[in-house]
Image (cartoon, rainbow, N blue to C red; front, side, top):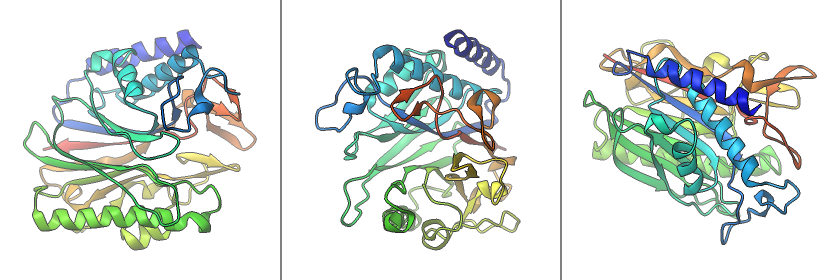
Length: 340
């Protein structure tokens, strides 16, 4: 398995280095890594599950194996050119990010990163990798979400940067609270996250700090298209037919809606989309910076899948306390922006 991952990674990296259109396109990827923890305890965090003497027996060797598999997914996504921006979910800390970009096959990609320790009790954070020659952050905020009668959750990462063309781009990276404990019982937490984003977007429209308001909102929302957080609070449209309103939000994953043969995760034998790619109408209007015709894509690649009772499912890293040579319980999603 180790040889397989290394061979694939070298193949895809060599492919990406031969690309010629990287100045015309920017690829943005979002990936829930499924508990990418190091193997040592962090003070103040409930991360004992991912240590050597836990039931998972999470060792240095297992940790670096998962790092290299995660890197191979990112490399695969960069098939026609390195992924300029990689949004990562379920990573533990800064050490994990440094190991990922410095001690794996991603080293040649030259990534920098944005990250801040959140108040999440397990130590789970979000982060963003970027290639400085493709995206230059000029302002970054970590939005704390306050959920009533609930333990702290992950921050929402918000950054605005400038592309080589001079166009500005704003990105929100999300990992909203899970449905553990019941969908209805936990719904208010995700609604709180949606309001946190809405309030920030409203303030950005007023200040005009973000130029053309080219906005991309990605991550694991733990909600579906028609849930209140997306449909009512953020008022995200699933109608991808023009004309588009500049400041309205559109869900590019709408083409996967109500499909039973593909999704970003699989639960009880059913495919679903919890990982969304939402953009402002300004990225759909055919002007200087625009989403390409393919829209958002799911990384539905054979090496990330395994057979199950109903077909195939994501080849996850953990099955109870058993660790596998898998990748994640979620599939990556990505989109391409064309700089005209």
